[in-house]
Amino acid sequence: QSVLTQPPSASGTPGQRVTISCSGSSSNIGSNYVYWYQQLPGTAPKLLIYRNNQRPSGVPDRFSGSKSGTSASLAISGLRSEDEADYYCAAWDDSLSGQVFGTGTKVTVL
Amino acid sequence: QLQLQESGPGLVKPSETLSLTCTVSGGSISSSSYYWGWIRQPPGKGLEWIGSIYYSGSTYYNPSLKSRVTISVDTSKNQFSLKLSSVTAADTAVYYCARHVFTMIVVVTSFFDYWGQGTLVTVSS
Image 1 (cartoon, chains in turn blue, red):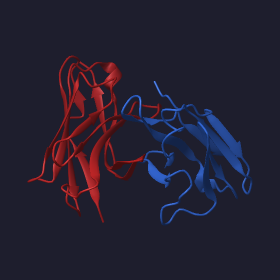
Image 2 (spheres, helix red, strand yellow):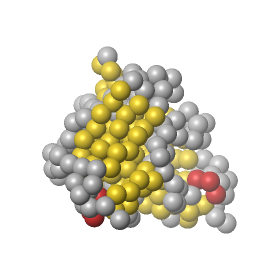
Image 3 (cartoon, rainbow over the protein chains, first blue to last red):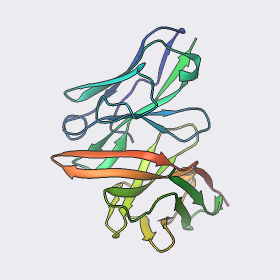
Image 4 (cartoon, each protein chain N blue to C red):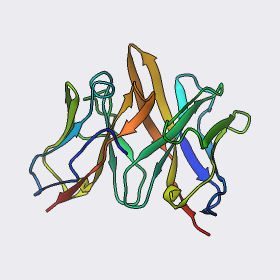
């Protein structure tokens, strides 16, 4: 049972901006960094955003992350067909002493 | 380039023990600042962290699985392994191994930057 809550789906047309929310608590998002992963169909997850809003080398600047209190968001601007994937937020939970993932959001490009 | 590869049986019987090994190439499993972790994903569902291990043997486990999980490391073979006991159909999943960047300095840094391709383990008689 995930402790980080995401909307199950999000969609947009090419070029649009899509935002995905991630809701947690004081023991995870509220006190630690948030990370985002992109999982293309049939592949392993890939780190997309680290430490709330940093992009690893090679990740387009169309992807951006933010955090406020016990919630975080991932924004995809200039949506492209290749962005169609599942997206997961993640954080360390101090109460559980463990890594927790979000419930996942499927992004569809219409 | 660091690479991770999972190996092990794709079919396990209920009540038995699931055993998987992750072989790391292109880098040393004994590197400081890195843990090595297991994550699983049931078909059509989300990601679940199972646990992580440091090369010294220090471990963190998901509390919901802790009673059934053992993660070990073999630095001489550059491998780490997962054992999950008393499996049921609910343990059917794609199991991934990954490098776990993990530090606890004021704010916890915890993320997975290199992943294996994953291996499907089905629990069925």
